[in-house]
Every structure is written in C-alpha cells, then in structure tokens.
Image (cartoon, rainbow, N blue to C red; front, side):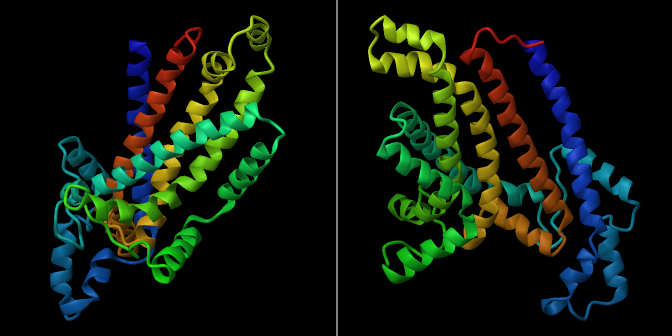
Length: 318
C-alpha cells in the first residue's frame, strides 16, 4: 500500500506539471496583453509606453515563455504563486481568502448528495418497478439534464424576487451570522447538488440491481436473514466500488459547477475570482487556481483508489 501511494504521488507531480504547463501556454496564446487590458480602464488610460514596459518587465512578461513558466514553477515550490497583475497582491493571499468559501459550498453539496443520492438509489433498487422507483428515476434523469446557470436564475426569480423567501445574492460567513449564511447557501447548494444527486442515485440503483442478482445474495435470502441485513451488509457494501468512484468524480463536477454558481449568486469564492482573471488575462491567478484545483482532484482520486481496498479486501495494489 505504501509503495502504491508513493508511486501515485510521484505520478501526480508529473500530472500537475503537464496541466499547469498546458494552461500556461493556453493563456499566453490567447490574443491580448494583460498589461494593456489592465491599463485600459480607470485612471490608468493615459499611462505612457515607457511605464507599460516597466510593468511588463516587473511581471516578467518580457521574457521567453518557458523561462516565465519555470520561474513561476520555482516560486510555487517555495509557496510563492506570483503577484496578481490586476489586484497587485500575492496570489496566495487572494486564494487563501476565497478558497474556503468554495470548499465550504462544495463540501456541503457533496455531503447532501451522498446522504440523499445513495439512499434514494437503494430504495429504487429494492422497490424496482413500483411508483417510487418510477418517480425517482424520472426526477434523476431530469436532474442530469438541467443546466446549472439556468436553474440558478430560475431559483432567484421564483424564491427571491417573486416569493421573497430567500436573499437574491451574496455570502455571509457562518461564523458571522449563521442563520443568514444558511439562507444564502440554500439556492447555490441546491444548484450544485442537483446533478450529483441525480448521478449518484442512478449509479447506486444500477449497482444495487447488479449485485442483487448474484448467488450470494440469493443465499443470504434463503438463510432467512432480515431484509435490512441483506441490503446493507451484503448488497450495498459489495456494490459501493462504482458508487465511490462516482463520488470522487462528483466532487470534481461540483468544483467545476461552482464556477457558474458563484457568478450567478455573486459569491466571492475562488471560482468567481478565476473567471474575472480569465477575462483580464491575469496569468498568475489562473495558474494558481488551476494548480490548487488539480491538487484537490488528484487527492480525491487517490482517496477513492485507497478506499477500494477497504471496501473489497480482495483488491491488491501492485
């Protein structure tokens, strides 16, 4: 196990280098100059060409691309993600301020997806063919197809503007005002969970139906075991591997969905920060965001892989 984890961590380092290099090159291939974009607004419109060149040199944008990349990579190793071209602050400071908000929303969304999606899938499998299975399956199929941004706009229109039950937009820390924070999170979290709940429900149902066809399940029934014991101790435990795989993917989907949700609901998370950074070509912010998200995704995938051995002791890691 230890050897496997070390090998996966080494592989992850190479994956991170490739991902960040591709993003770096993509950002620099895009037309436009981040310095000129930054200077074209506000009081900086009349900045001279000499001052622009000084800024370009200050941010290292006058050097060859590969030199810029390796300079940035060297800084990352020492915990320095560079300076935001627009905010003129360390990228680490910006991310540290906003990342907890995104992770809080994403973690709540994943937790709710698990506690709703898995039981719903189990119930559908056990009650296959009845009205509960039919209704839940229809809802799950619809949930997968609903665009997140459209759903967010509809929720704002209905529950905030028309009914006035929930605040339109914004974010308040739960440590400042817990009740207000919960009310502000309801619609964003619902938007983030609708796809993952639907996916987990469908996968759990499919996995349970496959497992319940196996001989050892029929043997458990023939021994007179209680339904709860057969379903949860035998069927669900052996059907969890594909479900756990989907959970790892769902967290990645939720993080990706937060890009849209944070912009629709005006939440000051890291996803909203990076969207604004892309528009103004703030390279250091985009690269720092991609690196952090890539690390989170790789770690979640590693945890999923390790959990396979706990779920099924027959699995061996080479």
